[in-house]
Image (cartoon, rainbow, N blue to C red; front, side, top):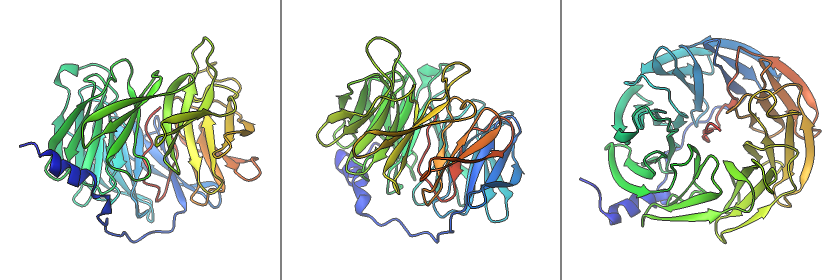
Length: 394
């Protein structure tokens, strides 16, 4: 039976509950899934070298890092749809679970308490939950029966207290709230998402009562009040939003990808409290992926696509307070479509996979290229040890 609004409100607002503390491993390593090599590269972020390649199944695509830094969870969507567990201390695959589906999966996320893994099908609107302790499937829920075989990039996001799972289903135009343990839908909220796949879903400042969702090509950020079931479109000034990156003080950085007309490629920051937005200095080229570096209070934006889409291969650096562009860094090769980079735990270096099967390393203070690390074929992102923040496909 669906829960009452009172019960949902209590669950959604239970951020005051204490999540059990996890013994932390000092972060040092990064993981890059190599889509066409059927392995993942483990990178040492101190020496900036590849220290191991670990064999997994076909087409490793998405990675989620355990909050305690012990494990990397690698999704694959080739011959089987499966999740691999890699022990980062021993650099070995320890467990593997095959999911009951034959469809490609979207991003893989781990709950803040480290207990659950969630992913979803691209085509059937199914969402899967795996128990990270037993490494067995807990449940599978089909949320979009009419969308069979339609391209629908379903996105998932855990509540901060690891009790709820928010699932955005674009073809069905809804946000679904699921009780994780029971595996039951406690709320379904209509959201106008059908004209493009969902590219991001976020929570701001740890407030589980409101979820922010965007779709590719949209000109608004949708604020979903999950307690009262109210949806509000927060309009943007420029371009079409493609990525969201949470900033401090109730702000969301959005990438504005201009497709023509008077719009320009830009970084735009939305203050969700005042519902006002501010444009940054225009970008040097199309921005599709964003990364926030709290140690330097900077937003780094990249253009990624296919040959000829991003020329030159720039990375724009913005001050997150003044929203002025501080630097434009030109890389040696293109960036794969849908691939996100990442900052090392100290914020001292930025890692970005390139189409030349290398990972570019940039010193964030000097903004100089340090090296390029040779990895496998078609690297699909960089995921930092102990950083459990989700990275949605762009």
